[in-house]
Length: 178
Image (tube, rainbow, N blue to C red; front, side):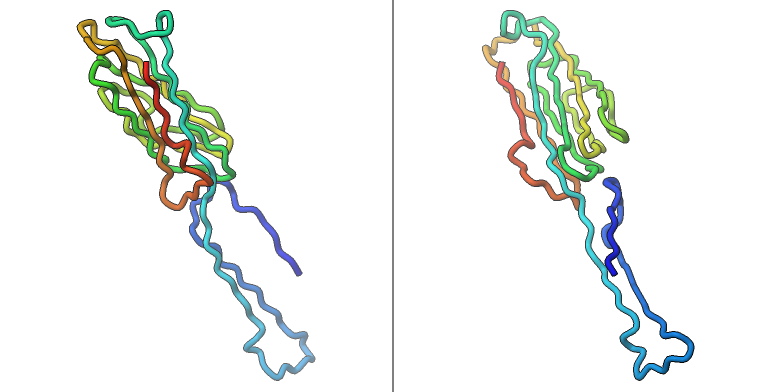
């Protein structure tokens, strides 16, 4: 006999136990019954590929202009087969980025973020991203009117939660220089 099944993509279990047994018919005498039960315990992990892609919106003629509002768009995706529960998303805004605030939108059933909106100088939250889903953060702020910098660099990253195996981590950081 073969027994097959599929664990739900959002399963929270870390092990699966299964036991099978056989019972002899009523008029059958067995020489031993110690081999009538067999069991197996298998470890369970979530597997996928988290990625983050960052772009800048609101550029004027392809550049940032002091005193103007612009938006960083961060798309955090999961192209794997399992839900990532508790993926850490982090973005430290540049020092010349003032009045920072963010909002999140969600794609995929069950996609959420612990802090879907907020304000400050750091976006530091966790997200649940289903297989094939994404969470998009729109971070808006103003480039300081008195800034003397000629380029602004900003990077964001996503880190997989515990018990989530990624096929690659090279796409877990994304940056822009404007």
